[in-house]
Image 1 (cartoon, rainbow, N blue to C red):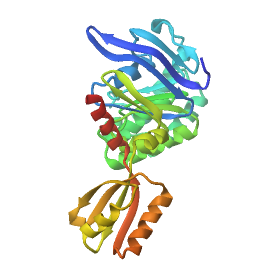
Image 2: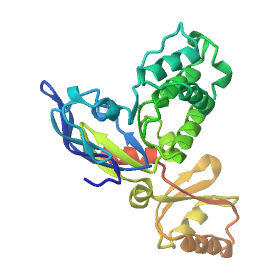
Image 3: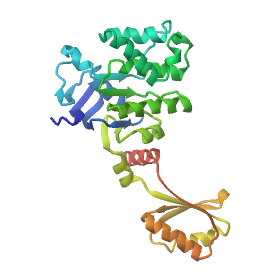
Image 4: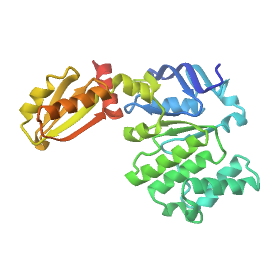
Length: 317
């Protein structure tokens, strides 16, 4: 088994009575990656993560973590579990404890000894921006603070692989932004991170690779860059002071313009454009030379959410 892989599965399957939740999944995640797991509810994401976290035993298949094969789940070496940090989407907090006592409790469970234990508590509290809340009772924290505290508990023992199941669910935009910054810091420190989320804009900003699950199958697994290159169409938005029909007539002459859509309330045309950056510059030049009064011209690409929806339609058809 290749040592550069943080996670590798072969034929991984989980069946609950007649329902197959995860079906014959081959998954490879390189060390140091942030890998985003995408899919609708019931696709098998949580079951897959639970098997990787040793919280659920596979029906069939093999799991390798950093090249070492998981054997009997009931006889796992404790040192093996120390490599993993697992944050499920419904992990309870002990509301009557203070932030410090909560983290200290888990640090002791992982057998962190002084002076390292106190040092580690200060480190994670600083990382999750809760240093000023260390003496506060957990019940007084906001939802975002509680989620950051849960993450601190997950990494208190310095795992090398972090498994996060819907960690930003229900958080407001500011709390999500704070959580993203923490994840980026953990990746920069060398941690491999697998994260599932329905907030695809967050994954697009965080991830190096993505996997898309449908009905228990891993239907797509690739780097984000390759996914965009293959499935994300380049779009150009062009606004004009003049007549839209004149603009459209000019656009139809360009061989790289595949289709267009009128945005009437903004006197704008959106086009799908298959050319290069140089071709895009030539298009703008040709419009100006044709005396089209262009007021805005900007290029963009279809985002991860659009790609996911397109793939979903392909699977359904």
